[in-house]
Length: 131
Image (cartoon, rainbow, N blue to C red):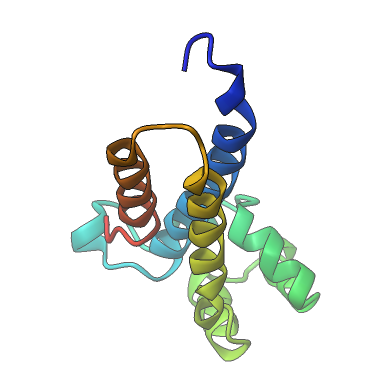
């Protein structure tokens, strides 16, 4: 991309959307993934009271989530259960929307079609990984 200012807008849009999809998947894996697959305990972000992208997104949807995170004595299981009850993990189509936006951003970029396919494949692999 060095010296290719004509690609800056497309690559910036691709990077922002695919990066957000990556982060949401990472947050979902932490919250609901299998520890055997991820290599770390499930719910670590909850127990450490981390403000993740998923947490911020969920708090916008349901103000009670803030209390579950900030009130003493709440467990990761309680937070996870509330996420499930309010349908937060079911809304992962947001990830699909982000991947689609990222791929659209590079669809008309003046790059070799092989690179366009590589970037689209990478977007899919980071957004739908299991580890």
